[in-house]
Amino acid sequence: MTLEPGSLRRVELRRIDLPLVSPFRTSFGVEADRDILLVRVEWQSASGAVTEGWGECVALAEPTYSAEYVDGAQHVMTSHLLPRLTSAASLSATDVGTLLAPIHGHPMAKGALEMAILDAQLRAAGISFGEHIGASATTIPSGVSVGIHDDVDSLLATVQGYVDDGYVRIKLKIEPGADVEHVAAVRDMIGPDMPLQVDANTAYTRTDGAHLARLDDYDLLLIEQPLPEDDIIGHARLAAEVVTPICLDESLVSASGTVDAIELGACEIANIKPGRVGGYLEAVRIHDVCRSRDIPVWCGGMVETGIGRAANAMLAALPGFVLPGDISASTRFYARDVVTDPIVIVDGHVTVPTSPGFGFEIDQSFLDEVTASTTLVHG
Ligand code: NPG
Image (tube, rainbow, N blue to C red; front, side, top):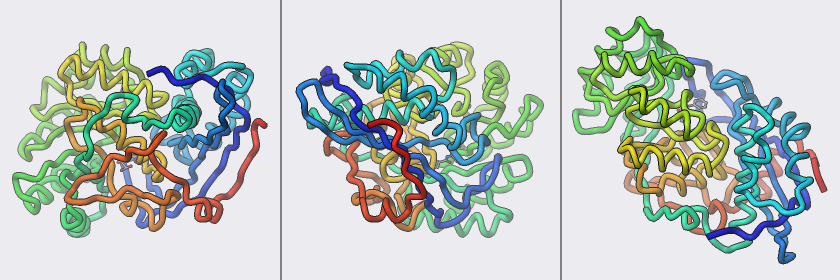
């Protein structure tokens, strides 16, 4: 279904501060709280109706996961991206990628703007994103991502807590010095049937193949992004050296690049994160190219609020998402969320939201409480 075009009447950029319930350590750093950039648009359809739309930018405070960071995202939106959108007399979310293509990079900033416009257009049409893309699953299995721990005992205690919460898949963050021993202990504790995978966030090098092959003993679903993001050939060689499937995250930034990585043998499983690839529409295209090549996909997470997590749940309801995603309960990271209907886990599953747009409602009073700044960019 084609959504009715319209135009941007007002655009606000809101920065919020949300503390995490516990620090989250990866091979690239520790997150203790999130400084999150939200986009709020007022959208006027061609027929005159005005609706609100929200987008969440997943850029972190520092450029450690990728080159983007939250201050940079706000700057590029304000100075380079939004002027190309606010000047359009007739606009649709499907135009955003083309209109912003002259600006290189900045997929997280672009994706957040596209998301806000898409949310508004879908709300105007009264349909959900899931319905719009033909995603039919009503519930999806929920996995949890576990940060690096200093010692095995504390890691085991944390993992046991998540097993007790009902998560159906455990992902362990790893780095050199915190890998085989940690995985062995967790596998021993959770038993052979619980799905387990690891995420290195680019922490290894091409010479680590024999070491990473030791993980083959623990029946892992996948090893995620062991090598630097630009090392596609290195991942292909590693895929031939280890039995455990190699999954790419940071390396996959577009549908065409994903096809190349698959054809080179570097990507046996794909992690899809809408922010990393420039938005939910490109994420759907990546799902489609993977599905047509029988490459399993799953939905990653960027420690989103209930805004981004509701949207991820709708995306992960597409049929190619055959592995549990990092779509854990809101309480995994936040004591209180900025939406009135945060993601919860029941029997290890998340109910896919079905209300119009991306399926969340803003908790306005709490959002105001955690807002550090609001900048009117247009309107
Ligand atoms: O559940 O949202 C989540 C977190 C999932 O581990 C997760 N994300 O590299 O995939 C990642 C990682 C991450 C993203 C870590 C951002 C830190 C910041």
